Image 1 (spheres, rainbow, N blue to C red):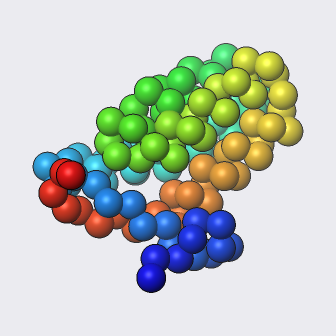
Image 2 (cartoon, rainbow, N blue to C red):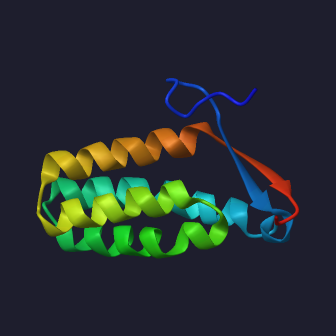
Length: 110
């Protein structure tokens, strides 16, 4: 049984098309590198920089098989556009948790 993403600390298993196997690790590494950049931008109240990175996440997540990243990106972009620092911080925490817990399983596209 796959643990639910709602269970704290439980792995989040995501099945991704095996054709994406060569590029998914780099994609996820890039999202991990975005985190400190967005936290630094938030610290200096550069909401435009956060919104730009969030917009890219929103647009790319689904294409790589990570709808959760697209969803977090959409919420993050909206919060940044509203200059809502607490909501931006919450979204960044959610992204960090997701990236720490994700386990990618490659399989054929359905």
